[in-house]
Length: 526
Image (tube, rainbow, N blue to C red; front, top):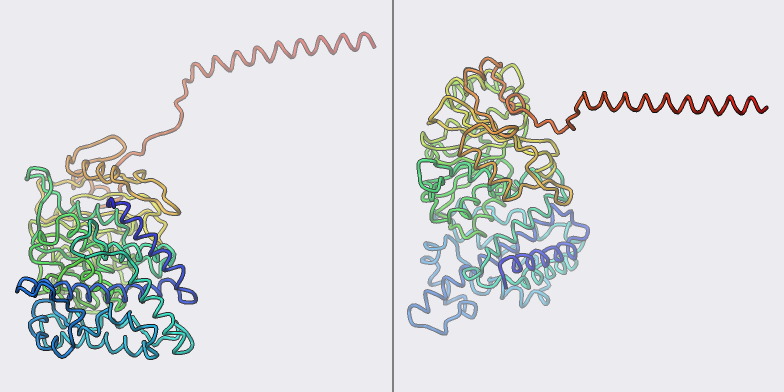
């Protein structure tokens, strides 16, 4: 089956599962069950494949871990945890639990115990933090699944069967990243129906692609793009889609030191870690932390980062100058002022700039107000411009993001630039309409990237502006202030129009004269 056909069939089946099973459970809540069970199936097949391959290499060609006894399997637990970061007994594998699910009157308790065992298997090991709480949102005892235990178990059987019937094949042999693709489709589907409550956790894939490629641009190399990076970071990681885009574009092995991120929402933090595993990123290659990035950042020992991508929450409140320690924080102090308490946008920007490597690039989705608002935000922009950190500002089309209809923008930051200017790109018309959203096409992305690489003026699309000129304009970095919109009004030739009007007036006078003559004749006859 061709790649796109395989993906389309996967999406069709997932959509059917969601429609058949969610019932009274809200879609955004229900996705936690679907994704949790999908993850359970994935790690069951992942560990089974690993153990089988090792035994086949050792000469046991007919070995099958799914048929092994628990007593025998437990003997190899320590070595398996060292390699995979977790352990699952054969009896607790997805496929074996599914076989008995319909006849298990205590299925909810069975699954609850298995999930706890999987998490506990990593305790005291380097992978403990990566597995702790991963199944916390898969509450198999929740009333959302049914008012009684039999009703909940019936729903759980249906979910197990539906996930089990997904034709994902061997995760090492798929022409698509089937498990990861299933995750992303579910996230997209639920985000589009959940509005801000769900969509704020998910960046559309085409926007992720643009952000990632912006950070990979390297005009000093043949082909203009880096082929590998040391490590990538997202301080507002959400479900991890921005970080994982590097794995898709470069390959997971080309992110040499791994994927780093922080997420404040515990549910989304769990989803992010699950997403890493579903995309076959092993525990030692990612470090996702939970907490408030602005006031309690978790990766001090890991910065700086060569590539930073982020879609921070728009204009949220934060402690700001209510916290006297923040103005002396090395991330915020250089600007001499903190972002407003009611608008933390530029606090995230300053944090990312501080943790950006000298040779690195940060691409950040921003709320448009940060480009032109006065007061403290203007002073922060002045710091950014006067120190030549702003490389490019890109105006995006409206209605790209779930739950956000306004036109957002991208700010690209660098610490090592070859000029003292900012490139402004007006991509507000670069989209197609798809469903109830706008979408960037591959051609739109290519046009934006080409303009970014060439860094020259292009009528009605791109303008390179000196920092001094921006300073004279009160450090306003709104794209519309520098890129002139194309006048699409019809050009009118005044001389031709006047001649035409003269002709019309002459014809009107002639007609009036004829009408007057007719009226006079009629009155004479009367």
